[in-house]
Structure formats: C-alpha cells, structure tokens
Length: 220
Image (cartoon, rainbow, N blue to C red; front, top):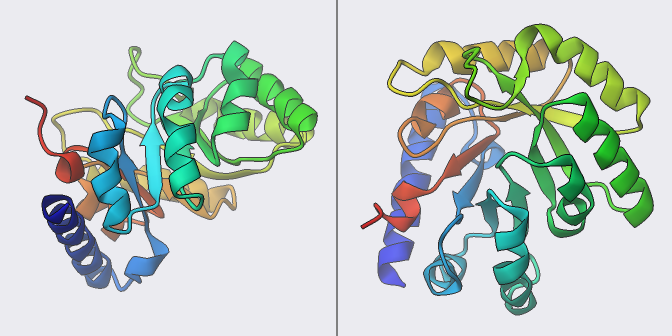
C-alpha cells in the first residue's frame, strides 16, 4: 500500500505544481487512475490511499471486476475511456458514471436510448481526433459542431471534450486545440493528458487527466 500511496502523492504533487504555474487550482483537475488490465489486487492499494476515480477501456472487463470493488467502496467513480460499440451502450450507461468516448452519430442514438431506458445519465465527453489520425477513434474536428447538435437534439447533455494527441510529438498544440474547441462550444470539461504529458495538460486547461503507468507502474 505504501508504494501506491507514494506514487499517488507524487502525481498529485506534480499536477498541483503544474496547475499553479498556470494559475489554476489543483482541485479543479480530476485525476483518473487508468486501471484497465489491472486486477482488484492492484487496484485496492490505490483505493486505500484515497483514489476514487478510475478509468477502464472495456465494458466486459469492468463488469467482471468492479461490482465487488464498488461494494467495498461505494463512492468509486468509473470512467469509460476506451472506444464504445453502439451495441454496448446500455451496458456502459449501467456501469459507468462518465463516458469519454462519444464520437459518432450511431453512438449518440444508442446512448440516448440507453439513458432513457435506464433513467441514468452519465457525464458525457465527445472524443475529438485532434491529430486527424486515421487509425485513432474520435470525431473529426470539422464534424464536431454537427455531432454536438445531434447529441443535443437526442437529449444528451455533452459536458466536455476528450482527446489523445499523436504519439511521440509535442502534445501542447493538441491540448491547446482541445481547450479552444471546448471554449468555442461552451463546454466546461476537457479530458486530456496521460502519464507522459499530464503536467502539460494541467497547464493547458485539463479538467480530467487519465493516468495509468505513473500510478500502477510499468508493465513487466
């Protein structure tokens, strides 16, 4: 447990310093521990250290491991940060408190139906393909206004944008772009920044950062 607590404290301190440099408050940035592929034994020490927001990539993996953990710690908040198939929308709405990967019309429609059926409304982010990468999920920048309009017409409240910058390049311009897009569309939340670049993201407007390796350690 002490190792997990130390890692958590290090990340929190670095994030607070980055926020302070940008004259932001650290408490305005939500730290999401990316627990995908990690089992309950790896997750519990972070929960014991006070971490409450966790990110997962897959509906099936989340359904298998998180109900028991949430029974132990009911105030856990789960974020879906991976791509979501439309036919899994109902399961995702049932399991998650936030979905960061809304990126197409068919998913908007499926989520609207699921929210109506279950009477539950997770916090929603549109994922934007800020690097215009063919292999990466996300709504193209040029299609963002139309998708936001579709979500509004379907009764979905989109609260923010999410992005993953291209790998191995300076992320700051991409974070700045996401911040500018969110500002332009009146959206208060920006989900951006991972273990390698969360300090930059914290300085450039992130309200949610998604951190795995820095909290769980490198994979063997």
